[in-house]
Amino acid sequence: MPGPPLDGLIDDLYYLEGAPPYARLTLPPGPSALLIVNLGAPFRIRAGTDVEAAEYADGCVITMPTRAYEFGYPPRTRSVGVHFKPWGPAPFLPMPAAELCDRPVTVEQVWGRAASAELRDRLATADGPHRMLALLEDELRRRLGETAGLGLVRHTSGVIAATRGAVAIGDLTVAAGVSSTHLARRFKELVGVTPKRLARAHRFTAAVFAIDPTGPVDWSGLAGGAGYFDQAHFAHEFREFTGLTPTRYVEVRRRFLREHPGHALDGWPLPAE
Image 1 (cartoon, helix red, strand yellow):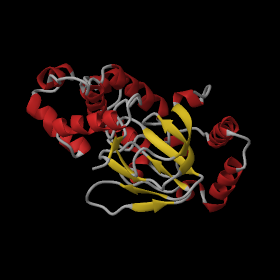
Image 2 (spheres, one colour):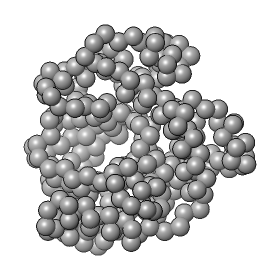
Image 3 (cartoon, helix red, strand yellow):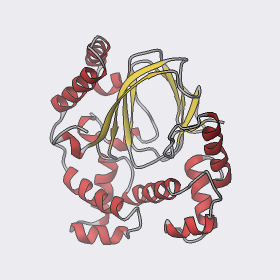
Image 4 (cartoon, one colour):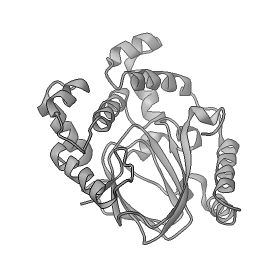
């Protein structure tokens, strides 16, 4: 975890190297964003079943998604990256986050070709993973600037997260002292989605992480505990977010546990069908 002020934007930085457990992995949408600086062979991303997969050689930036993404990996992969809070990428983007919603872009498109190439070269030749992560953190600190409305979005998002999405958006606007239109506009600019959509992501994520795939699942109790009106509403939300039915999702989780015993899988990613 980086120190202030990056800790208000970032959940963690990571280093990844080796053979992925599957050639294709599905990442269901959750309340987070992602930066990948690729140091190995290109990978592919398919941002929804209705679009073609695109290849990413230098890496990518993904603002908070509203649909499941499929990642296709080479036999061996190597990268460093950042798991951002939903509003985290905003201070580093040259465009509103809404323009990137469900449209992953390359690092070059965000920071330019020369800067992207220089960063990748410094990371690739760094002395070990810890030095690589320190270099990436330094790059983020150097690029960090003032962002209008960030305090409002961060505070309101914190309330949404604390309630796991079970909060009335109208109450948020009253507490913040702004109009619903203003709040939605700031969220679209900095997160890419509205407060209501962020709340849905938190509620769905909380429900998924409450599933224990090793035993029977009480779907009715799970749906009620997550604040869904009924089990049918939960099932509809599940299909929209993942492309899978709840029972099929559990089957995929159980498959992973069988094929990788002892390996922790906290909810995502999942093997792609």
